[in-house]
Length: 220
Image 1 (tube, rainbow, N blue to C red):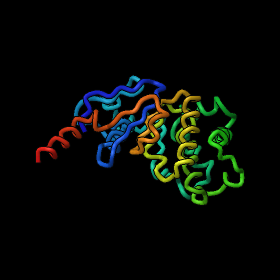
Image 2 (spheres, one colour):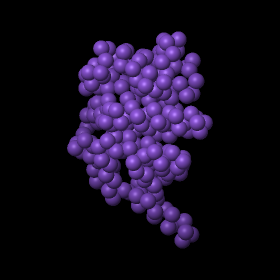
Image 3 (tube, rainbow, N blue to C red):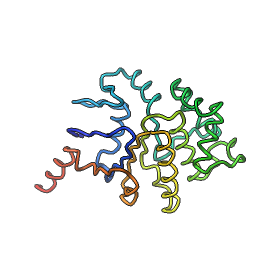
């Protein structure tokens, strides 16, 4: 991956699209501080995370970034509420921000689930493995949102949903992010979703490595 420059403003909702192999996973790993660039730097919230030690990057990620994964990455033997509040167990900052909105982490988890239209009390004490795909997706979103992290990274979170469910979930997610003032990076290959975002970025247009690969294929 070779991206000369990519700037995203605070509070912006950005759609990043690209086919398989275009570098989406690599880009998210770099922004999340999971991987380090060979050259250049990555700055988030005014901090050059490329210069941080791994433990510092882990702490920064826990405090400031909420992830929604394609396969959700929920803990199957934990309840819905336990999965959501788990994000705050690793971050005092997110715990503090969550408690500014509700009297307890559990109450804040309930509030988020209500906003995401998943407030069936019969489900909330069950292990997440008992939920449907759409319900698990909303739990994953609530886990990413709890504690109002400044950056939400969503990696193909709607790929397993039908069109109506996908659109409804996206509206709920963006509404809650707007309420919290979170920046959103939404990565998908489905360009039908991009019109609800502030800006759309075609990854191959900013990744010079993809351009070089394409030119090589044309020449050969």
